[in-house]
Length: 127
Image 1 (tube, one colour):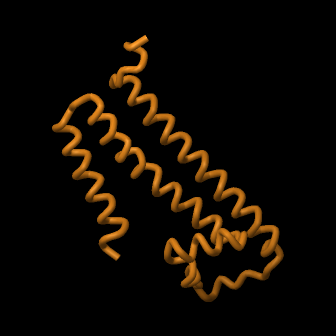
Image 2 (image 1 turned 180 degrees about the horizontal axis):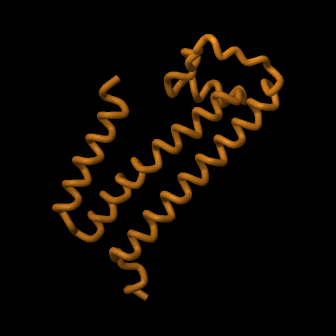
Image 3 (image 1 turned 90 degrees about the vertical axis):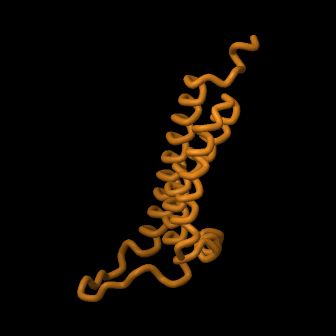
């Protein structure tokens, strides 16, 4: 019974694989829901390709995305799905730190902490 609960490389790899799979599927589901809402509301709108219009200012930060999602706006829900997709590998790295800690592998734990710091800096600190 104790051997089944120990943290082995195989168990950690299985958990990481499931984490990545769940993150991608959740993200795809959220984006699909947002796309359906967006198309339901704007599917018949006339498109003008002569002028490029980027994302509205309210969808350029996490707070705006959350507000837009709570208002059930399609573009906000799509952006939330994309944020979940970006968060998936970050969650994988964070869980890897936990897994290496459970295995008492301090060297890989330190390397993974450095990778997590670089990821977080690239997402948050460089803005």
